[in-house]
Image (cartoon, rainbow, N blue to C red; front, side, top):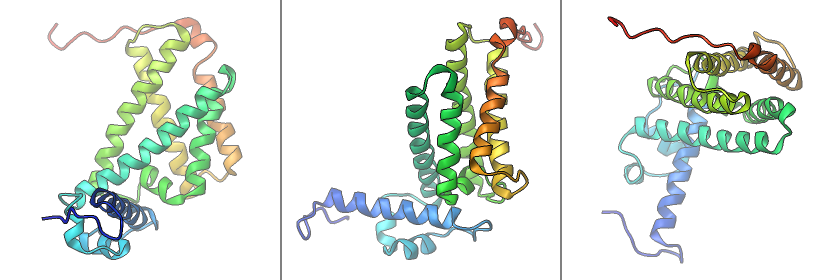
Length: 217
């Protein structure tokens, strides 16, 4: 059983939270600390965090649960700061503000860029989480897109949202690997201009496509 008594004036729940934070930090370092990370193991995570294995299992059932939690924490942090940046920007500058926050964040901490965008990080949990987050981000972008142009959700708006999210991710991935050689400010400018072009003029006069009927209809 996990010790629930205060120790050194620190409550048990606070010690558990601190150990969890250290394990998450260690997971991020091992997953994103290099372009070719080794296979992640519980032993390696515990060694990086300076925590014995018994404490690993008070927070995570296995290493896959840790990897998922690392990814979720990174995505939640970036989503929160990006949404705040977009909300604080005037309408005509919101795409640029959002892209600036994302690019500056991954440029400031390359581990985040590798975790979110590097094709060399082939951990199956990360691959699955990237797919999940892509769908979520597309929904969020689609909602903003529909609100801006007063559109109802349909195949067009969903396609635009997935195209935008996938395109941004691919450009940042190519930039991080050096295939797109540009300074961070230039990457922001390129992404902002592409997103602005994608949304105008006035969403191509608010044209729409008709969703394909269900198979067999």
